[in-house]
Length: 395
Image 1 (tube, rainbow, N blue to C red):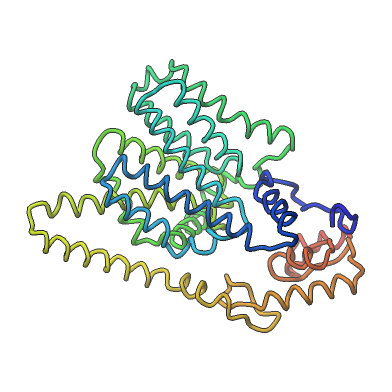
Image 2: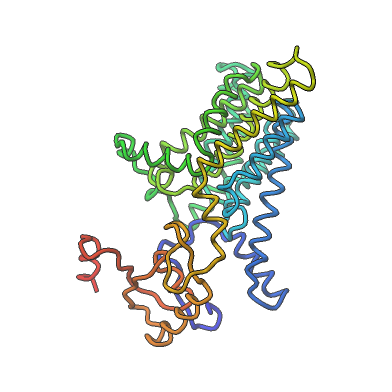
């Protein structure tokens, strides 16, 4: 549509993230001869699975191989990742690159050579570039915590590798923002830190992504980590997520997928808890008792998590049932006939001659209507909204 002139608009908020997955999808459409949405969804799934491999490699460095497998199991089967791990969005690629970054950072600190530093820089800069700024605090949290543990705080300040890593890792993201003049001001609202609603909203997003049972177990797992690299690494990753949350206050308290990067951190921390129960707590017990106890604990955690995230599981299970149009979005507890929606949106677009001055009142913030109907305009929210009144006056 952009090439033929039928659609000459871009998103109102501009191009925020580099359209990497979009370009890959477009290329696949050209090769396959059609817009097959299963292709970018498959790419996202593959990204998430590759991330699981590097999660295992990272976890193995701080817990036992069996505990690392448990971490991978949580990362793959957490109900909240079922939808985003196959969604047409940059986040699965970002999480994959974050885990690759953490793995290369750990390898660098095991043997701090310039070559390994450059590998860590390459992986980390890509993780920051795919979705600028989101993984920033965790990448630098992991790197900084490990270098401080290895060299001490004073020597860290004079380390040329620290400044080289910082400069080269930030360079691609910085050039991208400078070129597109895009910032993150709308995502940063420091005054929200004084609001109880912000903290409550953040906890609700965490509950949706991992659940309070897993979060509690993960925090306990951090306390059980052995001193040294394991504790320093996880302190950097947990601290990085916390700094991210108090920086991007608006989105972290309202958008669940802004806490996707918490899932691998929780997964590795749970591996520490699993490692403690299996290897330490029951070291003196019989093998049969140990297996029975571990199975019981695992089933209890699974049952508690399933009850806690029953709504998430239900939404995933019901998403393909399809109710008659208009229906409601999945997040509101019901499903919708999306094929029928697309057909009606196309009809609406033809009726209004694909107007660029439409007043849009539709689900999904009107994006689906704008896409399928090839129209643009103002989103109608609520009549009592001051913003809406101002929009109407502007029209």
